[in-house]
Each structure stands twice: as structure tokens, then as C-alpha cells.
Image 1 (cartoon, helix red, strand yellow):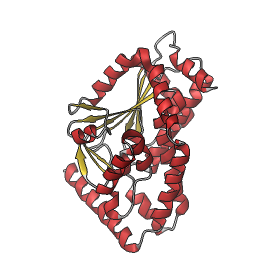
Image 2: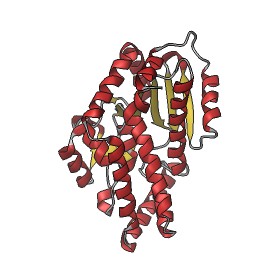
Image 3: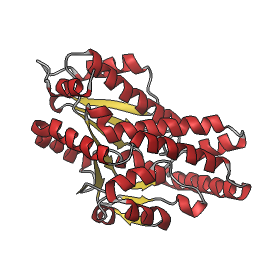
Image 4: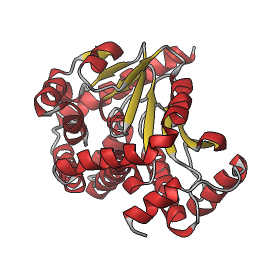
Length: 305
């Protein structure tokens, strides 16, 4: 199916509102089990939530990222084979104490200990595929939205910022701390640059500084600020307000994507560079990552109490 045909399928409304549970079951028939995420469908407004429930930490585990990618692929397949696609907005939120503490350092360290380049490559490719899907709205199929609360760190920001719209709750904070430990997030440079330009993106990534939600909004990196706990309500209202202009909004987002370099190529190059860099970390630098893991464990232990 061409992009025009997909767009027309999005515009077509089903004769009746689909049963939410049955629709989620149809997705699961295509994906199989989806560890570490939950799907919630609000049929009246065409809103499909991907609720992230990573275990054992609020980080982007390979299992979580792979689950998201399988949902994206299932939606694309449904759009190609069914008369009407009931999903018009794909939204992300996290159920944990933080939106995301970033990439899965435990997984990285395990790969490094085993000299497992393929494992790191699989992680990078899966993450980049999800990010590209968010940025393109699954090739013009849906509007993508993310709701960020509490902490968003490093590579945990990029899948959310890749979405057409990123909403931040007032107490949210954003930080790319990787540079302080001599590594970098996989996709931050191409994703941030598309949103706020290369100079400001580089300043943020080099600084390692923590920004509050208002500061990130003032830099153009957040699209809307909401009160704590208000992001889901804002997204539902967004679905209502933009229903009649959805196709135009997707087309405008696609036009801006075309104005930049090839995102797929940029992400592939970024992922390959990240794998090379991680494989080259010294033992002292790996020890720093292990200390971050220990600090995460202490923080999560305190929160659990």
C-alpha cells in the first residue's frame, strides 16, 4: 500500500466504534506476548496507549524496545490489510517512578563482559527502528505523542522526543549525563537537531546539565507543559481537538522530515558509531558505568521503601 493509500485509510472512519479489548487482542495475535508494555485502546478517540512497564528498572530494556517495535510493525501490517485503521494517535507513557533512566546499562555491561558486539548492535538497531517509527508516524499512519513525567535521562529521552508531540509534566527533568562518563546516547544528535537545531542540541549534549521542564520547553525541546498528573488528560483533549486536521498534521510533519537529511541513514550511522564507541570503552570507563548501575540500585531501593 502506498503512503497516499495509507493516509486515506487513516482518514476513513470505521462504521462502528471497535471494541477496545477485541482490537488489542488483534494486535496481540500479530505480535505475540509483549513483555514490559501494556496496550490500552480508547476507541472513541482512536488513541492507542503504549504503557511502558520495564523490569527490573525504569530503563529501556531490549525486551521493552522490542515489544514496542512489534506493536509498530503490527499497526503497519493492519493498515495494509484492513479497510479501516481505528488508531489515529499512538501515545507513550511510563508507569514507573521515572519516565526513563535511559539505556539499559546492565545489558551494555553484560555485552561488554562477553565481548558481544552483536548484542549491542541488536539493541542499537531495535532502538533506532522504534525511534524512526515515532518520528515518521509509522510512515504517515498515525500521530505519535509522548507523555514525560519525573526523570527522563539520556537515551530515554530520544524515543519520546522523536514523537510528533512531546508533553512534559511540570516537575519533569531532562538530562543527558552520558558525556560525563565518556559515552553518548544512540540517537540524541539526529533527533534533538531536528527539533532545536544543531548548535543548541550540541550544547545540551555536551553540558551534561539537568534541565527542568520549563527550561527544556523554552529551548523548543518540549511541545507542551502540563500540571503533574495531567499529561494523559492533555493527550485525550489533543485527540479531540486535532481529529479534523489529523491528515494535514501528519503531512506537515512528513514535509519537515523530508527537509532534513535521510533519517534512516542518520540513525543507522549513529547506531554503528555507538556500538564502536561502547566496544572501545576502557576498563576504567566500564567501572564508571558499573558505579552508575549501583547508584541506580540504591535510588530504586530507597524509592521502594
